[in-house]
Amino acid sequence: MHAPSIVSSLKTYNRKTFLSDLGAGLTVGVVALPLAMAFAIACGSSAITPSTGLITAVVAGFLISLLGGSKFQIGGPTGAFVVLISGVVGTFGFPGLVLCTLLAGLFLIIFGVCRMGSLIKFIPYPVTTGFTSGIAVTIFCTQVKDLFGLQIDRAVPAEFIAKWQCYFEYFHTVNYWALGLSVLTVVVILLTKRFFPKAPFMLVGMLVSTVVCQCCNLPVETIGSRFGELPQGLPMPSLPEVEWKQLPQLVQPAFVIALLAAIESLLSASVADGMTGSRHHPNTELIGQGVGNMASALFGGIPATGAIARTATNIRAGGKTPIAGIIHAITLLLILMLAGQYAAMVPLAALAGILVIVCWNMAEVSTFIHLVQGPRQDAVVLCLTFILTVLIDLVVAVEVGVVLAALLFIGRMAQISNVEAISRELEGEDPEEQPGRSRYLRHVPRNVEIFDVQGPFFFGAVEQFKDRVFRTLERDIEYVLLRMRLVPALDASGLHALEDFLAYCQRRNITLLLCGVQKQPHKVIRRDSPFMQELHAENICENIDAALTRIQQLEQEKAQARP
Image (tube, rainbow, N blue to C red; front, top):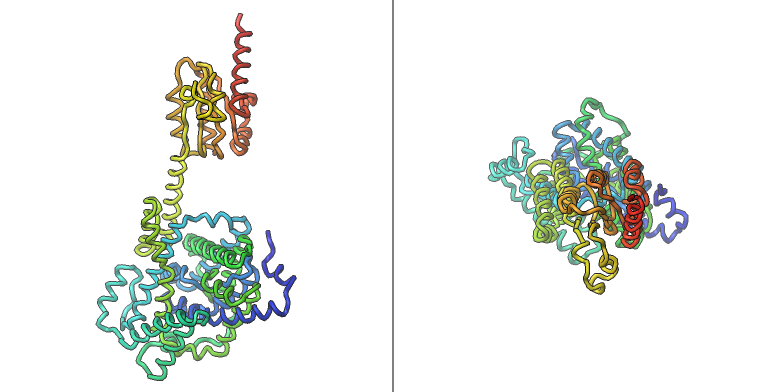
């Protein structure tokens, strides 16, 4: 297990590096301010206030940088968790979310200790794109009320269709001042990004809308009118009164939160590697993420992970080491302590406008369209994951998407695997047409059948093997040679199929031989002592030439044994 990245960074740390980290940390802290508040509000619960998002960014962001495996990672609340947080709080309340976040942090630590960092990267791309785009649509749906300033006097339903029915029912209550501020925020963000790409455009959009709102005394809802003033500082860490009987029910959403945190944080770290040429340590990163989430829960925060946009901003601003991420967290803490009362002036329509931009970026429309136009199986996985995320639940979407992708992958591997009888087809062919093998097959005796086994020999390929081999053996065959030079892997089902075939051959007085067995299949076969005893080690040959020589020896032994 590698030490946190900060350990190696401090060995060569100097004043110049610190100044670079200081500038980057201050920049990212300013950029993270509106996002942390916006993501907290997007959760749609009165128990989760803008200060909750800031506390998460401070506590989790500090520990992820301190203990993580990436030099450039910036941690904090992200849009990936909004749907899950909303569902958990709606079902179990805020204490249930605290317990769920603690459990998710524990899962992340277990992932890291068990060295699962490399495996988590294998989540299929259509699945991650599907639920990311679905999350973007869901977040946008939660912001329609604040975006248009709708005066809804009842709880907005959580379900997608019911939510939109509610919006249409109250659409006559549109507050055009709020809508104007939302549009103003979006326009300012886009113009700032276009003409001043290095400026914190999200913050600029929020500040402009806030100034306009306060100067014109616009009748719109603000953070202060809905949530009150923000606390000036961090609360003391504590564990709220939780119902431990809820723990079994929270395991599933906690596992999905941990999985999403792992996927997004490792993706963010990989993006940072691509931008800087560095290498992160995935397992150390997962442990840092786990500790950060557990601490966030104890301080009353929400789940956190590595944020791609903020990490990229850190790199572009000159961040060199994890100290930049620590400075980013300290910057947010100072803002919370010194300017918390001013945050109450921010109109909710401005934060809704910020989230519109975030949702558009998350949706990855061009990537989504590209995948839909790609292989049909990938398109099915993408669309199913997207639809389930929007209409049903993110937990179900991730589970179904991963399982379906795995089944489709198994089907593809089974199609790649192949078994063909080659002894008769290649006999007498020109050696130049089949270099390296037909010169050995030209003189294959008539009582020998050779099968060329290709591709992974696993449970998905077993039935094809049985169909091809068991049904094509002729009655006068005395020797069967399985050529396995193109079999890179063998699992328990494949080994069991070999055992069945050996028993079948023995019943028909046929000798089974294997040749060209690669390292992994050879290791699996040798572990099975009963199979090796029945097969005999000398019947596993290095190549087809050695196997034909072995058959000649067996023929001579038979001839000598005859009276």
